[in-house]
Image (cartoon, rainbow, N blue to C red; front, side, top):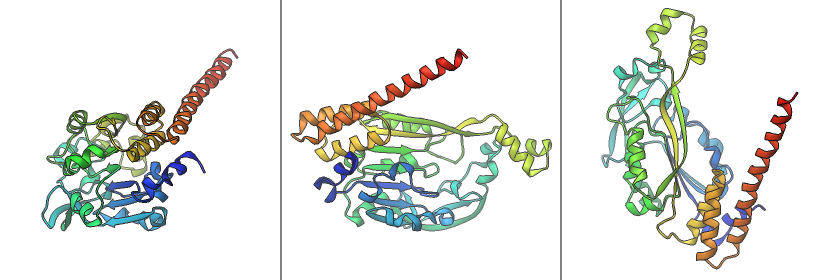
Length: 314
């Protein structure tokens, strides 16, 4: 049994397992959750169930899995308007800004095929119904309302979140959407630090111009593939800075999450602080593990550097 299993088998997590929230859960289980799924409670939402079939395949992978095929928003109304777009991954409670999107090659994915009214629930209401008092890992790709969903949580729950993942946009994809700068501004003012920032994008090439170049759909795809991508949105991850004196459970889980994110320096910091705050040998084991990971990264770099130097001399 490895150290992560040892930690998650402790009494702190048997009685209060990690809580993972996935809003906009289309596609597949979050790859970073595979090591902790069997110990965790997962709450998954997706109003557009055209790409929601994966849930049936992973249900047995979690300690508990709660699935909500409805809207989750910051509004308290029982029903809310939902825009079903050509691509299920672009469906949203916000209306696509088709005028602004017209310059982009992927604009047709946002074409609205149907407007429907769906059942709506707030995240706070879900937690209340499930008698869950915290969220440990908050992940959302809600097509324009990421920040308002996070802000809909109580301040106490927001402050105790250990990992927060968002996918906000740079461009005007939806009307009145939460933009990347909104998320960065809000999270930077709180108890979090930015761990990951991965820029995603599409081609600034109109469908009309693409059609003028060729009418062959296969060639169109090749042109799109070869054309330079421009930033359109980003996958960003924040980690709690642990400045609000959390309990031992959070330190243990924060260390596990930091290891998963390969933030070994921060995991070492948490292990050292845990050793000082709590009389528990596990933190010494965690410290040694973090140090080994940091050293392994160094030796890998040193090894590959020596290989490249040898190759350059050939």
